Length: 221
Image (cartoon, rainbow, N blue to C red; front, side, top):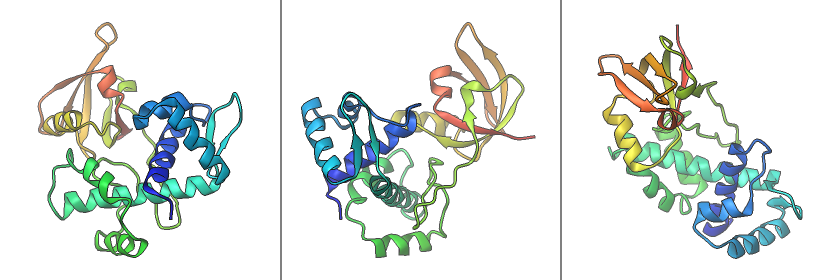
């Protein structure tokens, strides 16, 4: 089993590679994400490369190997199943479970993970709408787009919240903008870089394009 430190690096690399158009991550951005120095991150990348978990060529980015990708998906599965359990069963606030899951994800055995997953009914997403990989590492993602790219009068359903920041999660929950909520885009302001939306039985909410970009939606008829 990979160490906690290795798992944290692999998980961070997975997320950064997914965000990057090239499918690769940079060592500076990785160091920032993990709160370590560039030198520390570089040393760990060399270790991960020797273990064949990443590919890191000189003057190029860092990419996960198939072996590294498998570990990343396993960690994500543990993390997201734990978050789902904490919210559904222990009734913790969805804004508080990320850090708890960060602590627990490294200690959960495959046997307990599978029993938890079964107990929860094999959920496909966690409370934030993040897809949960299955035991084989398959990930099913709903086709979506950022709310910031919607046009006025479009009707959409929220499928995922991309920002795990506690304050942001509190804000979207209080505004009725959790996954599963149906919205109408009332107006879009290009000059104000904002848009106004309204959930069913909710009040109009104005979001900056930056905030709306963290909310993924699908179009509904």
